[in-house]
Image (tube, rainbow, N blue to C red; front, side, top):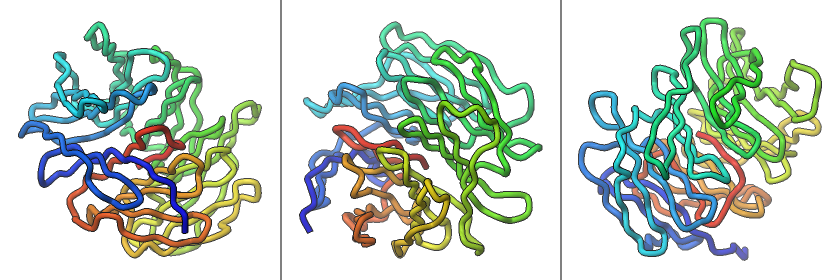
Length: 313
């Protein structure tokens, strides 16, 4: 099996370090320590591939953003205090990022001017369950008393539209004009809510997971948006959906439940972190998975250095 080389950015919670992992060998090429008292909540690679960001939470409801120079392999803390970043993502095409605090407040961080602006917060009690960002907007899913809500904002935090979901969302991913929100319904059924850009209907297309005790967790979309990859929590199984038919076309036994999943460039392979903290490489075409680093130390966040299809955790 000829696997192309790739690089991953990960976080080691035991060593308190950000890691660059070479694939497919799984060798750790670099370790960049971060200070005590911080816990990673998200990592992302900048669009130019020269920098990466690690959003971290500290005590007292505050946070910090660490910037990684991927050429010099150095790390520094951005000199601005930010709220606890429950969710974080850079906005393409600008030195700006978006954050969502545990309260649900949406923030815009200007990385160049070092300013933080609150764009607003939900008018109802709601908990954010996922964030995806691309050049068209900010996509979010929320758990509320009514079930679930998909809300899309522009890059300045202005609400463009919202949609009721058919259940409680568990993740969110977006790729090639497709938005995917795995959910758990009030009747116990688990499925995927699928939205395509350019469609006029508000109700999503629906695909269903097989009956069972698991619920949908980490998810990713293929580069063309025609397939979805969804981890079944507590089962150690990855479900592959044909989104043109809205059916499960294949399952892959991983051996451990997955907490994060992202596709490598090209879409044939994926990297994943298990709930036990081990790193896996998955051949999506052959239906096989193998551990890259079974150290049990990795946080549930991954980013591809050099570009990747959109995934979620």
